[in-house]
Image (cartoon, rainbow, N blue to C red; front, side):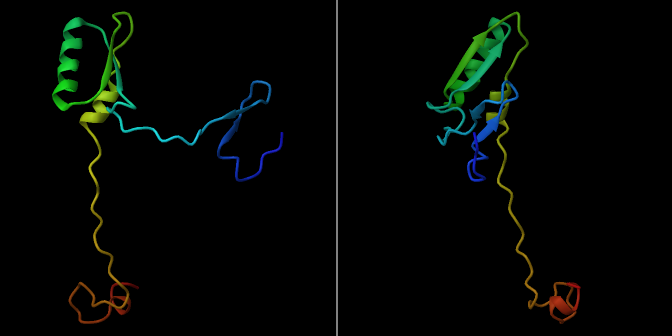
Length: 114
């Protein structure tokens, strides 16, 4: 099967028999903790289950908590929701023809912009 360069990002060749496998289906994934994409968490004890459930309910997030004593605890979805990345503010870039911020009175391109 021959794939054009435009379609390469959508398909991935599997090493199992050379069959093609679709990776991206074009559907948007909902925000984590919503009805369309609930957070999935696994805990080991009943006490931890109540603790994690109360955190989700307090914040109004949709979730699924599994109680599995034999497996290690997995709360990565909860940690992602609690420590969501904050937007970074970018400083205004100095234009080449603006006065230099060092206070020399020259244009930036003739002073510190070299």
